[in-house]
Length: 159
Picture 1 (cartoon, rainbow, N blue to C red):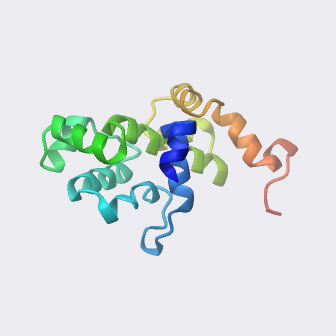
Picture 2: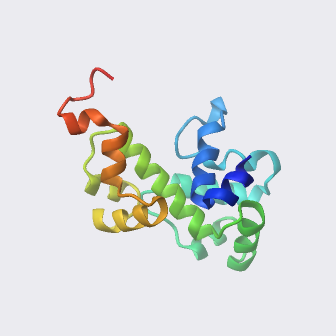
């Protein structure tokens, strides 16, 4: 099913869908659900790298440091990610960070600047460019659409 979504709508949509349908009680955090599908058939090194990415969202590691921490060369790590996830480690990391930004925008009252910093972006504008480039709309638009009480002035307590 995910490959069909990827073929029709791209990697970002497939990644987002994978996090919606995976249920693993031991990994309920929004950060780790995207990597949960690796547990069944993925290599332990790719899973470890994905988990490291999830743990370091606020201060992302560069690919060289990530590869070092999982005892692989950068090239071997890149090939493994491409084989198992169909994307580079950098793209997966960015998608994970943007997914977390979406989660924070929908579930908290943090400002976009605070969300950007919690997701490893230098500014709200940097986050905004990345988010709209991947999802085709701004994070602010997504927030209003997912949280209509924000636009109406309601505090969300009736949710």
